[in-house]
Image (tube, rainbow, N blue to C red; front, side, top):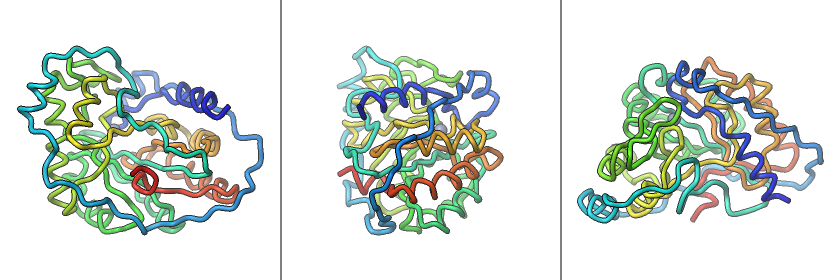
Length: 297
Ligand SMILES: [Zn+2]
């Protein structure tokens, strides 16, 4: 039952995730999720545990070098294209009333805004979240990055260097051309990984591709590099195109174990207002929020 509902939500979630480029997002359709609000009451108690788990120690460098990746994966042809693939994490390994809120900051022209209302809300309510930051967004928001990185409430993750769909053949998503070969897949992951490792003192554990699209060969490359490739099960803000009401109805419909994707780089969007409505409802229903590291070992 839960699995089928998740599958439905995942299909509904296949709206725009370009995130960094509103015109491209809208041109791509930005399909609006129509998940129906939850009808059964949630009564189990839950509590939040912010700020208790930090990323565990990891090797200082990727598990595979660029040359090793090219030699091992450069000749392989992909068979899949989408939000899943070998090793891709799409939901938490639990059906408890636990939800991971994840927010992308995609960077680049039109994508380097900072939704202070959203982050301020999370801080006030002590709601932990995982923040997927693109290299360009970090460069455009160094002070904000420094504050976020210092807060145990938030876990910093890698959202790529140039915000490219992760392909070994140059496939596009939402009009954004993907990486063209295994070497470019490595670069897209490793360059921002090295930046984050330098800035944080420890490499982030999780990577989400620009647009969240990947092919199966690229997914295997990320795993070979020692990272966890993370997608999502609930598209919480439709690539920052949803109204507050759409965000609220979609997020409050998320079942336990969901990984919800939203955006923190579009302050003009409905994301902050919608999340501010959804989170108290979920807490009152016994849900609690976690960072990915809290549930994914
Ligand atoms: Zn993005």
